[in-house]
Image (cartoon, each protein chain N blue to C red):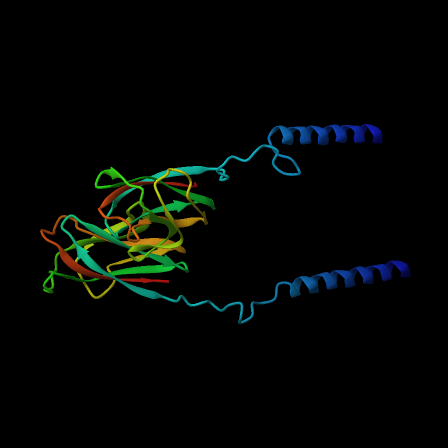
Length: 147
Length: 148
């Protein structure tokens, strides 16, 4: 009988020990664990001349998954006069001799990003293209902000 | 009983080895000769275009499986006539409005495998440029054999 009681106590201790070790393996996250690495952004400027019915693109690398913003900042005549003609902007992947756009829209120049998409790490391209509104070449400037 | 089990196991192992060998596999390595292009799956893209004197042209392509990419300059014509001058071909990554080449070689249009480079999964580019040998604007044809 005593032997049986000793066995029961021993079994209880083993169970307690197992429970304690299980608890220690599921400790609450420490402060270091919960730290989120902030995204670091790079801004590139893609400026050039867009011919009537033409297009151009600029390749860039996204190093961390996150939002990529395109801002068509300016469209001007070759002489420097500001224009508010809508032109196409887009984001895609460099392919062949161009940029295979996955997202695009027509927009006029502005101060805020006209297009924002979330991208995974990789190589992408920002494109500008004439949607049919240009009758002559224009100069443009686009900001590309990406992680 | 044990002997029967051992015999059965030996037969099974022998059968497995025979099957692997027949499939060109062996625990010691491949038993069949490697092809000249070691990538399991190859895609060939042709990049043809114009190259101005001291000009540059590039072509972007995506690789899903890493492996080796091969470039072959198939033809080069200056003002429509076959040319044997050296132009530079290269492999790199598209950045800004160019192809930033990490591996370049000056070649003539021979059609043989001329430049090889390791291409990891991602977007890469092949570039052709004139480093000063062209005297007239040219046209070219370049084959890009790459992993799928």
